[in-house]
Image (cartoon, rainbow, N blue to C red; front, side, top):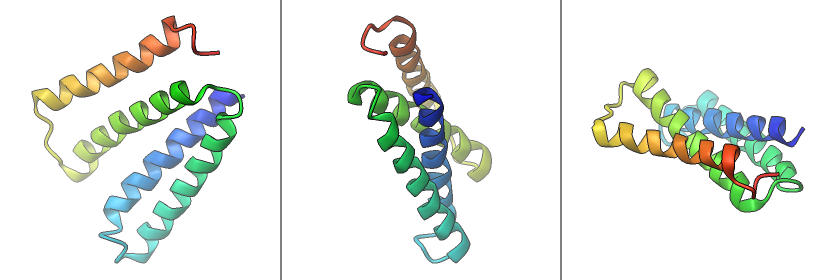
Length: 108
């Protein structure tokens, strides 16, 4: 169950960050409310996950997947450009998350 909660935490963070961009500095009400709700959901589930999965592992996965997903959403939804360095960086983040999950003894 902690892994499902981590998925919810990551999803909340992604929704919150994406809506934060759309909120235009909290000048648009609906996206601002979605951002606040998304971060609230994300942090709530993150707190639950931290009861069972170690802090370092949880944060690495939560932030790594979130950064990669938000970067791709920024590219697809907002037309933000990704150069080769950005793509390599995203690849390294994904590789790090995979290494943690597949081969690290620190993950329970």
